Amino acid sequence: MTEEKKHVTATYQVLPVEAKWVQLPTGEEVDFKEVDLPSLEMARLYYAMSVAITYADTLAKLRGQQGLHFEVHRIDVSVDMVVRNSLDNTPAYQLHVIVQLSGDDAELFAEAICRRAIGRCPLLHLLENNPLALKLFYRYANEEELHPLFLS
Image (tube, rainbow, N blue to C red; front, side, top):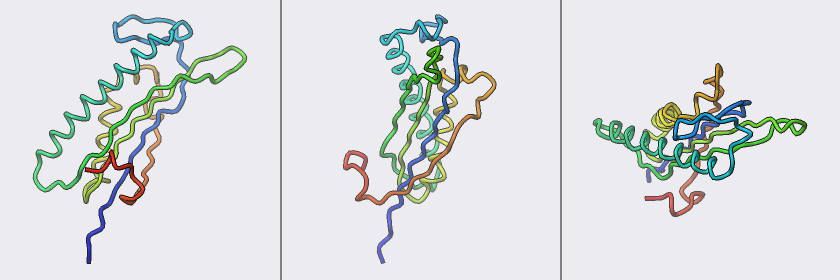
């Protein structure tokens, strides 16, 4: 009997929330409607760096403990600005963090890594009084369904 390799993908999505201003990596606060594309791209890079640092830090701690069995196949982050109200172009945003793991303990640690990554994202201050506006989705996949790039 062969042991089946289990894959789990945890996706946390911050639901769109109206925001009147955004703080850029420079610390400057600007009206969201005045944020141009280069500034938004710079912010996306900053968020991605924050998640990547958290991801590496978390994995170092988790894998350093005895008896853990999981492999990491993917870490991804995206920040998208969307328009909620077409009448006045009220801006909103979405934050997506995806971590893909495999192994016996994958499900246990996918959520922990996602939560820690989002916790370190500077974008959270835009959520105002709604920091728990998160949805968690698990997707189980066979190796054949995954892109070869994500397989070790």
